[in-house]
Image (tube, rainbow, N blue to C red; front, side, top):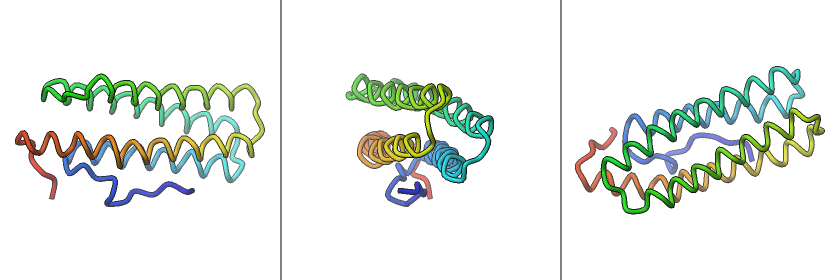
Length: 138
């Protein structure tokens, strides 16, 4: 599964959608780096950029949800922790010398985890925020 941004991933809140798009772009770059057999340092750089961007985004998203009184915030934070843990574990496994085919399977799993989170969890909070007056993205 090569990850692509789709309309189905939108939460209809401009800054969150833009951050999600950037994460999808970084994840796709990681996929391509692993698939094409780029230098280890290039793949590690992709991991670092993805994890840094994801952490900043998740912090922003959680702050927004806390301010809005989102009732499923703790559950949502657990999902975020799982995503970051998955990325860090995958990065560590790659850095320890794992072979690319095995790593690619794990990258695919990470993509599926992220897409599922965007479509199921983040769309739900998007609806919650929109009901409370957040501006809908055009």
